[in-house]
Image 1 (spheres, one colour):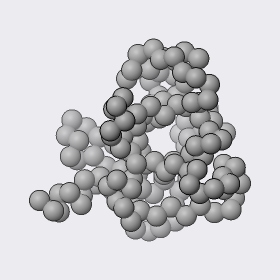
Image 2 (cartoon, one colour; image 1 turned 90 degrees about the vertical axis):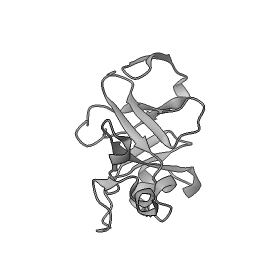
Image 3 (cartoon, helix red, strand yellow; image 1 turned 60 degrees about the horizontal axis):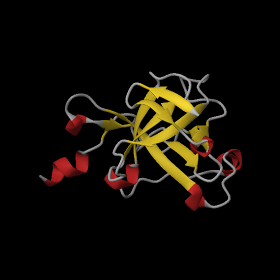
Length: 148
């Protein structure tokens, strides 16, 4: 399958790389098929792009939250486990949406609403956590800034 992206131009993808979000992503409910693209082709980065396969302009900058916040906790309830057909918790990939401007050091992550992907079934969903400690705009490099 060929897709067009603003970030990477035209890409040829195997169908097994396509992720299905049955109800889309909040605000983009009509976008149900995405592909997860590493920000660094060498794979040495915790950053990714969740790219729509239908619209080149719809792409979300994502990060592995555990690289920045090892204590980040996402509890998957039975309903979500069933929706995503998760048989083993290790099949789940958890990513957070990142907002960044010219200064990546000021980037924020949406810890309140992570994206959970079943890596085996290629199903995904954005969920909202009830943990009051998690913010929609959490400074991504907060721990690093404190150590300097």
